[in-house]
Image 1: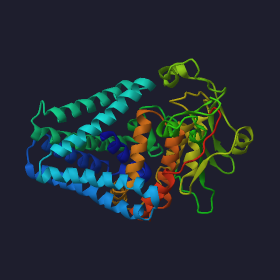
Image 2: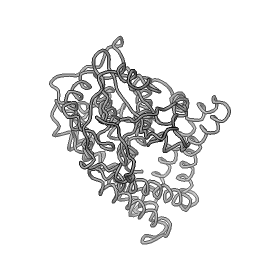
Image 3: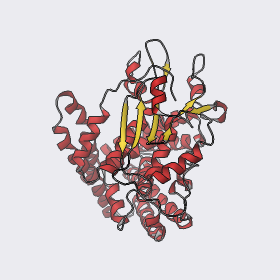
Image 4: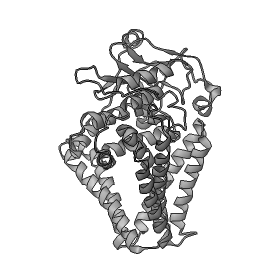
Length: 448
């Protein structure tokens, strides 16, 4: 939960760009300090009025977001309408639980928090134990901490039932405040030519080591320039057995038993094509899942960069889905790719086709919302449902790895954010439902 909130803050600063905040880095520090003070007051139960006001603000935000989603769902038909109701209903229910703590006590809200901590804690710790990427021990400890908080909420120990819920909410608020303080201090020392992705808060997995360092401005593309095209081959359509989440986001086997993780590429016409694959077909036969997905250097293999989409179609097949993004910085994208392609080493969970596409996309989108009113833009982004969706996707990728399914969802979400920023909440969410529920065909060969 706290990780998703932190990732949303980092993504918002990435899209606005560091230049708007560098001169006033102290404002971030002050805002973060105020949040830390609020967190201490909540955790210690120093003011009932402050606690209730915080609950009302959080609960009201969830309820309003759910209500904003409903108009889009009503326009859907049949089974998709009922599936679509899950998201706004969950948001409204979460808001209702938070608000109920103000009037009826926090037992229901504590149970909901505990369940969320248990689910996220098990997923985070479990995936870290399997993938064992750089920093996996910290991820395991975070998952264990979430499980510990769940036990505290359910047992009412060591804090009294009246304090354990404010403690958890205060912890969430405090971590957000601490992140703002860190960002402010880091932005103060960030050189003008360095990308925000080079800050340590982005660098835990080493995915942004090639973020651009550029002299001078990096203007956005013109309206008549070609868009960035993110293409995805998903393994879903060729799956021999139907396992919706696993097949879409991890891997599948086709009717012939061939293993497929899917594939993702990024293209900017006429001459930039990002496609990272292992030099030889990947065969997991005879290996345990833990060994296959290990993210350490022991699983590094030689890789290759495909030359063009036409070559991949000729050698393989056409992509299942493509997403166009029309607002970006071509200079930042090219600088990122110039650094990354110097090393073709491939790792199935830490340096794969999806990792490079996601990192390149974020490099290209730095500063797309730069403007004269960065603080208003920051507030607007933090209240946008698409930012919440993007943060959840990044949270899953951070705790596991980027996969073609996650890249597809992320590219669609970022496209709505940067290319359709004047659309209402309801229209954005309707577009999200229309795309995320697509049952796209997959591929039947090994992939990157």
